[in-house]
Image (cartoon, rainbow, N blue to C red):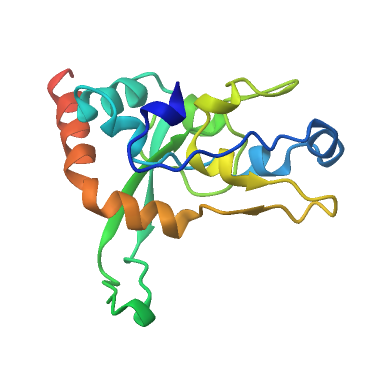
Length: 170
């Protein structure tokens, strides 16, 4: 479902390693929920409505990235004053507080269950899918916060539209 429906998002092969994650205790999921790519929402008939639906569930929040990541080697320039908002699963604390925006400090992802992530691999946020387990627990990801900010900076209208929809329902 996910990879065939996600425009401009390369497929990620399921790289789960339950034995490594179990031994580590899911440190990534306990401290920093993964960010979702815009493609998940752009695949919907109404991207802003889909984002608003997830935010209204209390399971998702909008995180902030300060500045625009750039690569001078590619002729890109940054913008240190720009704030880019992008969605990710909420932490347990954020859900308890009922906030739409991130609460500072690390916290456990609301989607983390006793046996790991409660979502099937294909439905997990892009950053979670891109996480590559390592035997020394120094896991890496092929898709990072910087990649998320680069992609989401072109879709802030979707974020603004979702927030406007949520405001209109209050």
